[in-house]
Length: 140
Length: 202
Image 1 (tube, rainbow over the protein chains, first blue to last red):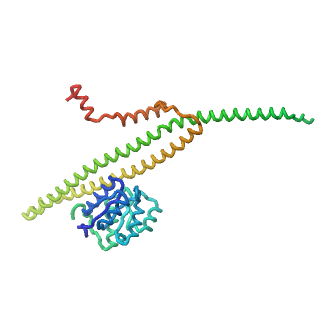
Image 2 (cartoon, rainbow over the protein chains, first blue to last red; image 1 turned 90 degrees about the vertical axis):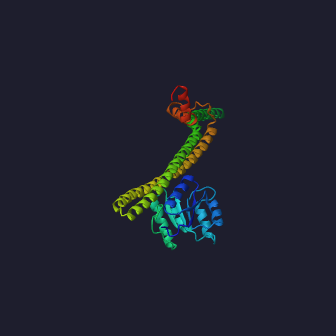
Image 3 (cartoon, rainbow over the protein chains, first blue to last red; image 1 turned 180 degrees about the vertical axis):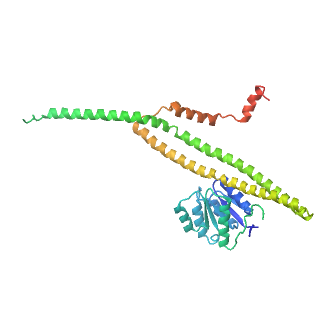
């Protein structure tokens, strides 16, 4: 069983296909409360309205990029402790360093596997004291 | 022997000859540039069409990927139901002392679980579409930039291509024609069936 399956997750990506993929993988990992946003600005709006335990975001998006959204989250007293996992095609070392400097919780390069997502989430929740011990895959 | 120095009139004529030669050279050079540049400029008129086809390609793959996702999700839902039922039946069999049958059912469950992982892998493999769409977006932006530069070349050459739809000849022209046909007049199965029905096909 996931340690905290009630965590609400926000998936941020301008591509509907990617949102669906990430949502599907999260569901397989036991997260059932998953919302979506198409860009950083929409995500910030949702984050300020509802309580989320995790943000999974793309980098390149119109209106507001993932990295700008991450900086905005870290600069906001109420939001700054939310883990942010970036899932992006921006695979340059400089991108990763920029994301780390902006306060990213972990980083996945597209294309990715469910195992990579599980591994990164385990690391995020381990560091925040909510370790997920099993790959739920729809059941315990 | 010292050459005779030219008088003013002779010098003027010499300068005119030089200017004439220079003007002919410039004119010839301009003609050559125009001849070389014209096909390039004419091809550039098709760049928006190329960009449009690339954008169509991204949309087509997105639609295809969405359908594969929909079907995969349905299979995942069915898998979850089947696994839940199998677990319940295996539990009941053990309760009634049918350990052999329960064991066989648990082997089936293991296979189903493996398939479940594969279905998740199918979903994540579809992320290629996002990478492809991003690259196509960049290619379209590059094409637009090239087109703008070629438009500037048109101004320099002072030679506007005809734009009558018969700009490109040969293989490239044929390919454009085929691309246009595949997009504009590709027949849907319903339309094909209608025609087949009219011709007596059941």
